[in-house]
Length: 145
Image 1 (cartoon, rainbow, N blue to C red):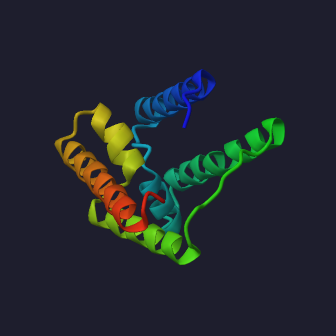
Image 2 (image 1 turned 135 degrees about the horizontal axis):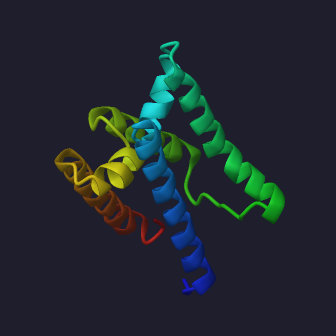
Image 3 (image 1 turned 90 degrees about the vertical axis):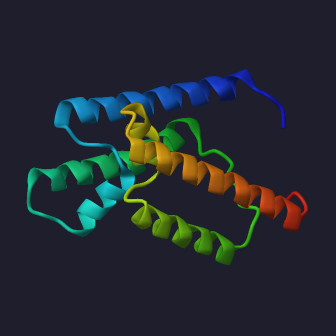
């Protein structure tokens, strides 16, 4: 793996845009930009203005990469593992999101920036578990993770 300055700058720009968008949502509407809350709100509509906000947020979340792929071309993405393992991982993430009352975007981006003790604990937990899982997979699969 080689360090590419353009990749680092693209990551920095993407992270800055996520931070600015989260700040604008919090300051402008008073809502935290947690994806699990947005999707959960769409699954349990209330008939209030927040439903429209959730739909617009999710449309932007899906539409922006699709538009970028049309303009600049789709990036090469390859999964190096089995589909059942990816499904299991997705289910575990969903379970953890419910158990932790939020996701990485809500806790990691918004909660950390607000110095929320619950978000600090949640982020430390999911980062530690992620590191442990990668280490365990590298030991058992011989560096494939």
